[in-house]
Length: 186
Image (cartoon, rainbow, N blue to C red; front, side, top):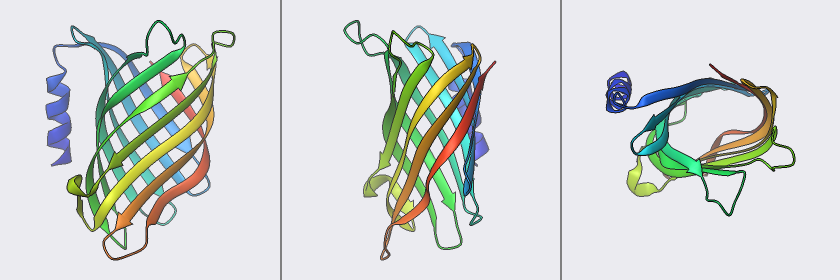
């Protein structure tokens, strides 16, 4: 069923011009995240569609599918890029299952004096009204420092927190760890 939604979203962007594809791999001692991102230019501006899969050493799975609009924050903020959008998350663990539709975004700042260095943060949150199954709320956030080693390859160090507020239980963290990452554009 998730595959049908993904195909529908991709057809929605069929009139747009694909600008770049990215593969993003993030590893820590306790988790691995793989994401595929496709950026588009259309008459409406810049946008991106992404799909990802997080696996933890507890055999927990988190699948994500999202889209966002993105661009520079304005002429008064050189080097600051912003993206806002929606992301669907589905998790399957031994203790609970969830589906959540989260709203959120991303900030990326690259100082003009060091254009290959950047700080990136993103946060997605789903309140109770759009969090289903065994969960009341869901949040996903990352913070990273990245360096462009080649024009098409970026390495980074970061931190990710994925938290679920479960019905009748204490909050559960699917991932709460530092990581290393590699993003390749093609």
